[in-house]
Image (cartoon, rainbow over all chains, first blue to last red; front, side, top):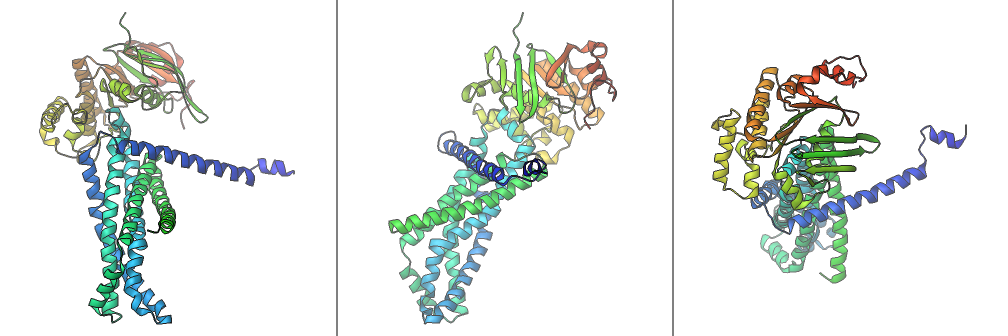
Amino acid sequence: MSNASTRKRGIPNPLAWIGAATLGFFAEIGRLATFSAQVKAAAFSPRWYFGQIWKQFVQIGFYSLPVVGMSAIFIGAALALNIYQGSGRFGAEQFVPNIVVLGITRELGASITALMLAGRVSAGIAAEIGAMRVTEQIDALESLSASRYRYLYAPRFLAALVAVPMLVLVADIIGVMGGWLVSVYGLGFDSTVYLRNTLDFMTRNDVLTGIIKAFVFGGIIALMGCYQGDKSKAGATGVGRAATLSMVGAAVLVLAANYVMSTIFVEVGL
Amino acid sequence: MTPPILSLQNVEKRFGKNHVLRGVTLDVAPGESLVVIGGSGSGKSVMLKNALGLMTPDSGNILFNGEDVTQARGKARARMRERVGMLFQSGALFDSLTVWENVAFRLVNSGTLSRAKAKEQAVETLRKVRLGPDVADLYPAEISGGMQKRVSLARSIISKPDLIFFDEPTTGLDPITADAINDLIIEQVRGLGAATVTITHDMASARKIADEVAMLFEGRIIWRGKASEVDNSGNAYVDQFVHGRADGPIQPAL
């Protein structure tokens, strides 16, 4: 049997597979970009559904406080322990508060919060909108002369843009507190000295970079949830897949955006 | 002759290799009740969604009140939808809103009425579909399937549209509740003087609410006639469908 006929009978041609996957990847990027542009156009032009924006702000911001707080305190505590252990190799234990505050404000506060929200918020949005899609609620909305972009997606996007930076500020404070708790009660640091070192070392730019990242992460988290929910296929499997894809997609994009923004901040000296 | 309120002209729609609508041509006169019958997968729902503008046909034209709305977007589409109601197969009530907020959604969203006034109108419309004011503040998940259909009917008639689409209005209901829904459709639609397009498998419902019946098969309208003629259509496909026989030119969708 020739190679050609073997392929015809089901063994995939690797070049064809790579080609199809590449085309599919760029098509998906195009669809996501178009969708994002439509959501942004709806979010930054009237009409705004303020009731929906507030509802989503509470849903995304207030109800995420416990999970963000718990994550931040444990990350801060673990960071302090690891830095203490590592810096002890060259007798630099006194830098624990400096490195903890730097790590939390510039990096971990924003990225850990965003990763937790990719699970809690992005997947939740995708599941909710996916369920609305498969039960024809989105068709019903459009048939009642309401745009799904204005009524459903823009409020979630705007709420996330505001709520995620606020959550990151909370995570920064609780994360630093986690480091302080372990350092003072576990590693024998003096409380006053630890806090003074933290405040003296931290700069406005450290906090600002984290907040800028959080703003971008908020947009990514809401957009991925809305996008995957909007294109959800029928049935429980379709909704479950939308939730999974939104969570994975948001997490990967958050980490990629984090790297890009960190590079830019270093380049511009922020 | 009165011009049709809705006219589908040679409408085609494909999903990949699946050619669902293969040239549907259909006119609906003002005040007329047209029932479209057809087997599962014959394209009935796709036809309705194209007519409502929830999907865009690949070719052909859709005219509403003489205006071509095939590619209508934005305000032109909104203007059309303001005059059209729709009862979805699943009810499609918004589960985050109460019953009255669902019914009054269009009124509140258009900004023409205060919430208090809109609630009054919603309660009044709920009464027309035999639902008491005690239901108004419940959520859709707290009421039965039959009540959900009635709420959805109330939502479709509250703005007094000129044309209402009914997608399988009696599916999933017991025969008594289904008959009650048919009665409400007749009573409320005749009261409004609106034209209706109903798609259904339920022949009891079709016989009761239709002025005319059309049959969709393999993406085309293959027969249309008065409701009284449906049992003696002389069309083998229609005969097989209305008598529910497995034997005949239509292959069961197994």
